[in-house]
Length: 336
Ligand code: PEP
Ligand code: MN
Image (cartoon, rainbow, N blue to C red; front, side, top):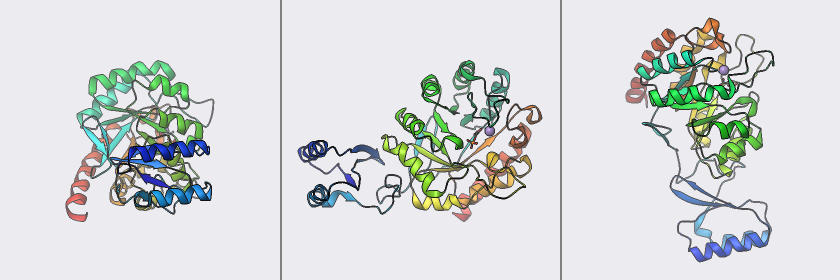
């Protein structure tokens, strides 16, 4: 059950909190789209529930969804998350681009310089890589933090980086503008909580076999910490298809937009694993109604230490960027 508290008398609210505490019922206060919410779980004692319903009937927001916090609300139909010089969500379309992993200062500077020359506002590049095999490149680790700091300062670009644990979160706090929670960690509930508590915006990638409910309940865990700044990312799921690394499930985009007010982005790089199909899938993401895309770019994809086959070269990215701009203006003015 959710109460909108802005119109509730302070004293009445304090009394309710005391009563809940006395009955050992946990509750949460969350700010969402400029409204203050008070969340109380559904499965509480019937008498207490009735008392709340009688006392606060005009302030109750009902939802029949298990993912109550992230489900679309009358007062919050689309959430806009603000960043340096831009925002994600609302009417904007944003591009997040960069290498799978930072490999050296030189390559990170080369890509971020190139991206900022195209007015791209978000640089992705991770230092702690959750690789399937322990024998492959695991990322530069803490050594790379200084590199991210240099890029952030020099190009005033927003930094997206993936922490794997609380120690990573603490180390990355100063440099990260957004934390990315990877597919493999979508249901790492303690990490979701810790990332949520950092108060940073979070890109939550869909688990590779997660259904809609599991995906949204993972987001619910982050919201439950009081942090509403969650961006959902479709990045492909496991199917029987043997012609691509994953199956990019673009059909989830309009469904997520219907179910929730959270911004939704698409990652066609991991979604397909194939450089030759990234372009059409990026363009299709725009038409699917996504709020942005995340694309892997590398100066020399053939030499990349991770995810080379799905990384675009800078030339390929630049060509795609031109097409995206044209499609975006057509889409916004003629189709939307
Ligand atoms: C990544 O973005 O490089 C990554 C590892 O993505 P995912 O978690 O979607 O596999
Ligand atoms: Mn990758």
